[in-house]
Length: 145
Image (cartoon, rainbow, N blue to C red; front, side):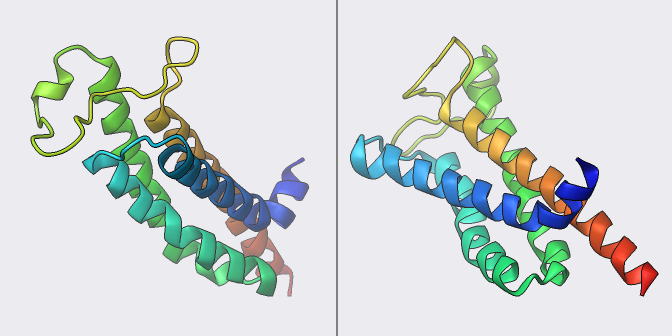
């Protein structure tokens, strides 16, 4: 399993970014959910990864990982903050959204805990995990050469 993740981690990370971007666009463009400010920040950190990881996957270039990984870490932090604004009472009053859609509004609430920021958080975490495995695999490959 570890060998598969180190070999194909870059491709899996790209696939996750692709699905997350597609899901984000589906929620806003098809279902008509208007993104709040924190949703836009998450999009800003996710959307470029589709292009960057796609090109890196095509070229099998693991050197992109140190440049893309911070995008996922920052995106995960924004997603976690957004999720806590939705689920932790009183947390939304710390930095309330004053313009547009309130960030504490949950368009979906599947099973009582799955919201859009939760889905984004899972995507960012998966990308971090896949890229970490891909990076460890590329370091081992360089050491054996």
